[in-house]
Image (cartoon, rainbow, N blue to C red; front, side, top):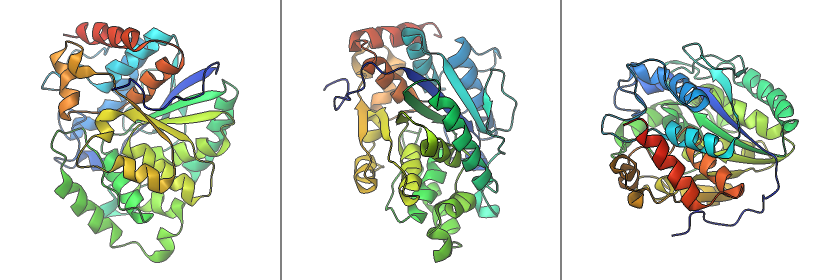
Length: 336
């Protein structure tokens, strides 16, 4: 298998790497998200990932950059690529429960609500507008932007958004066994309350069933002047669905083959329906010599914190697959 499907013509670009951070209370529903040691602690994951990617470590000794099964978190992969490429990461706070410990841009949002209990993102329009302003800022930093996300529970909100927009979506999960029944029950419950008028308005869809990351990313896509690559799987396809509904210019997407090959999701089919080009990175974690990384191949974690896009970035910058794998192997071993 090639390291990267497709051959992007992006050499010579000045690249920026950003990750939008957000919380949704959907992640605190038991069994929905594996991005944390407990449902409540999923609200800390974006903060810890930002700290790891920025500094190379997590200050709190109670938290380790591995899942309970020993699978390295995607943030360790992103950190490895930051070190390899020398591209400094920038984080955007779309709406977090806890204060960040690293420098960031603030979109001035709030934690997303459980859509079963009212509007999920009451400030959706404001977050979109702030995303537009951030897109203008980022346009001055380079001519190519790799834009990732970290939103535990975000595949469930992505499912709700995509379904509301009319796509027969099946989304991925950080779990090996995707909690499809739980996600489907939530989605059916919240979609039952959406009128045809709401479904025709992408911003109203986000307000009712989305999460804070989605309007910020869509706003950045509206104003960013260079080549935009959304780094992520089904959550970024939800952003693309919103962009298409708003008749915006379609970005590109970069993610891992582990998301593409998830039998419980339909990533390639969704991408084709939306009309977004997707690059898939195959880092060959099964042959890298690390048992934890090999768990990606069996469906654990798969993607997150822009990891697929970060490996895509390194490849576009001219680093070889062997250099990329070697750096990741060294990084994850440092946390054993």
